[in-house]
Length: 337
Image (cartoon, rainbow, N blue to C red; front, side, top):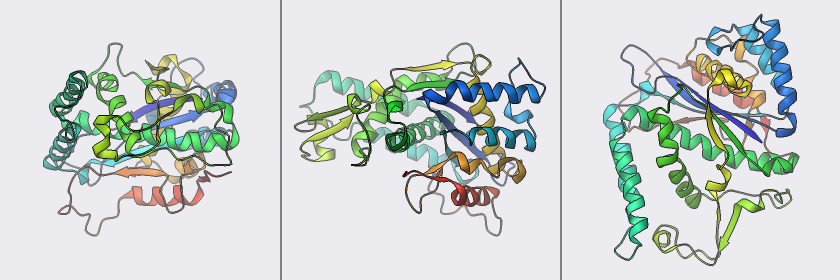
């Protein structure tokens, strides 16, 4: 399968807003449908009068956004969103969250652990402690999104198109020609943290679904490694997913070179504009058809909070993203076949 990832927003606390959504999003496209999706998108661009040039989602009107959603609804794609309202965060809260996460990395480390492991953990810890809050928020949104994509995509396609689980091709929108500080975080902390997260929250698998193509990513050992026993307990057998193998085909690419990135840019910008109240329902109203609900009562759009914001309230104000999330929840597709 092909997974295209983009982000939108400033990921900082603005001074003159009532609400301010930033988000990281992914579009999962089955390999067997990718060529047809791209062909349809090219035809749409021609209709919009943009045959060869790149189109940015911020330049599209409601009718154009809706036409792309209508096109994608004809295919077995999944659109995933992890969002955060930066007006519900505080600088102190973000710093505290980042510090706590950094402290937890070496919480269970003892003198008995291998020096190479301890050094590796301390390096991740140092990077995390030195991050700006802006980069930290981007990193956590990305981490949550990546974990969610793997959980939901495997569950969804194991029931419908199991061959799609054989290979995962990740393409992330590169904002500049040279590597940015955010992009450097993928290798330094995001993938190590994602592996740790997968240990704590194993992936669910349906007994009746076909995971034969995914089996090569699954590993089993008699017990957890020594450095994980305190956190996980004496689990036997110890089953886990080889995250580094799932993400071995990961690359950054500029969006003008990749149609998938152009599509996810439009969707990402559209959902952010909608959640901030800057895109009318005529444009985004059916975007929920591209999303899948993981379980009953859960929200397809993941809205996270990284601050202890008990003192922050909207009082009598109603953020526009409440309506967006409600409508998306109502019309999203079931994850179970």
